[in-house]
Length: 504
Image 1 (cartoon, helix red, strand yellow):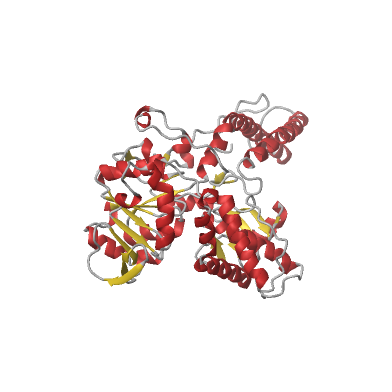
Image 2 (image 1 turned 90 degrees about the vertical axis):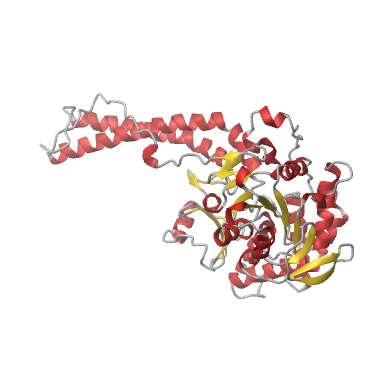
C-alpha cells in the first residue's frame, strides 16, 4: 500500500509529538548511548521496494520458468492481498495458516480457498504449530509473498489433477522455492530492477539523515547484506546519494561494507572473507587479517566483524527486516542487540487509529455483554438449585427466573448481531483474508510473538530513528498479566441475593 511520505525536518523531530505510525516500539530496554556500532541490512531495510510491484515481478519470473519446464501455470496471476508476512505454510496438508502466539490456528486456507471455522477446527483441533517442525514454513519476510501465493495456486492444480509433476505438497513447495532461488541467482529479476529502479524502489530521503546523525554521534556504521556487490552499489547509490550533502556518497557513511554475507549463516559459521579490491569490476582477493575501515568485503562472518572492531555482544545493534535471518540468529548466537523493520506496520497502525472510535464502541458493547452473561449464569445456577433443592437461593419464583433468563438470551443474541459485523469489519481493515498483521482474533499473532522474543525494538522505517535521536534510552513498558486488569463489576440483579461463601 503506497502512501505519500513527508520528509522529517531535523528540528521538528526534537519537539513534535510522534505519530504512532512513526514510532519505535520497545520489547527490551535499549540505551542507544551504549551502542557503539550499528549494522544494517539493505533490502527492505535501508532500501525499500514497492512490495506489490517487486513481488509481482518475482512471481511472474518464477511462473515463466515453471511454464518453460512444462508446468500447467499459464494464466495464473499474482494477487498481493492473498498472502501477508507472518503466515505459515503447512507442507503436509497444502494449507496456509495463521496461528496465534500459543500456536493455535485462528484462520486457514487450503490452497487459495479460505477454510470456514468448522473445517479449520476439524483439521487443527489437536494441532499446535511448532516452527521447529520441518512441516511448517514461516513467512519471515516480504520476499516470501510471491512464492507462497504461487504455492497456494499450485496446490489447487494438484487437487484437481491438473498438475502431476510432483507427488506431495512438500515436494511442490521445494520446487517453487528452487525456481525462485534460481531466478534470483541468475540475476534476471535484479537486472530488471536496476534497469527501471523508479518502478520498484521507494526512496526515503530521511534514512540518510538518520544515519548521518548516528555517525556524527560516534556510532560505527556497518552494511551487511546478502545482495551481491554490483546490485548493492547500484541500489545504495540510487537510494542514498541524492539525499546526502554535496560531495558525499553512501560509502562515506559506512566503516565496513559486507556483501554476499549469506545470512543467517554469517552469524553462526566461520566462512572465508574476500576483499573487493577493484570496485568497478568486482575483482576479489582472499582476506584473512583484520578488516580495514572503509573496506568492502564479500562473505566472512560476524566473529571477524567483532574482532576487527574490538566489539561484541551488546555493543552492537543490528537492524534488519528478516525475523530469522537478521534478528533471531544474531540475537541467539551473538547476543547482539536487535531492531526489526516491519514496513507493513505503518498501514496497520493507521487502520488501528482510524478504527479507534469503533473499537471503543465494541469495547462498551462487550462490557455490557459480559455483565449480561454473568447475570444469566447466576440465574441458571439459581434455577439449578431450586430444581435440586439445595444451597442458598433467591426467593424469586422459578418461573420468574426462567422468564428473565429467556429475556437475557434474546438480548444477548440481539447484542451479538450488533457486535459481529463491527468486529468483522475491524478485522478486515488491513487485509480481508487474514486481518491484522500483529493480531490473531483477540490475541497476539504468532508473528507478534516472534517479534517480542527476538527484537529488542521494532519500527516501520529506519528513518523513525530521527524522532528519537542517537542518544535515546528506550524503556520497555511494564509487562501486563491478566490479573493486572480490573475485575469485572457485575451490576446487581433484582432477582438475585448475595450467597455466603460456604453451603449451609
